[in-house]
Image (cartoon, rainbow, N blue to C red; front, side, top):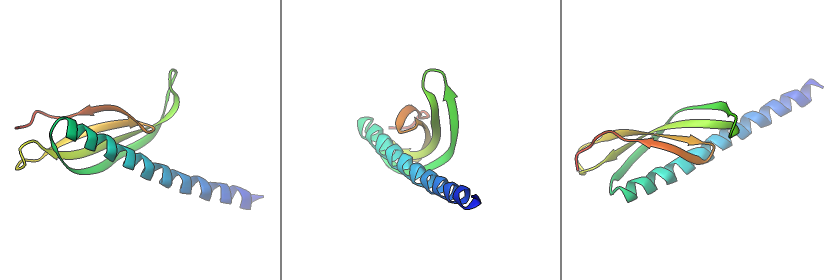
Length: 99
């Protein structure tokens, strides 16, 4: 019986890593689209955290926070922050930057 639980745990961990990879790909797409719309140069992306959250309106969801680097003038580098709820973009915060 414990083999079934062990197999379930391994499958759950495997699913979690695949899910995080897919969330990272969606974040990259959202951030690149934002940078195109704002005429910024997209440089890099890094996941800061992912956690399970609960909201009465949304129910259970994964909140993932990403830091991304961009440039407004091609020479300087700035760091922004994006939050995703599951696969949907919740918000993007960027500091003041030079154009």
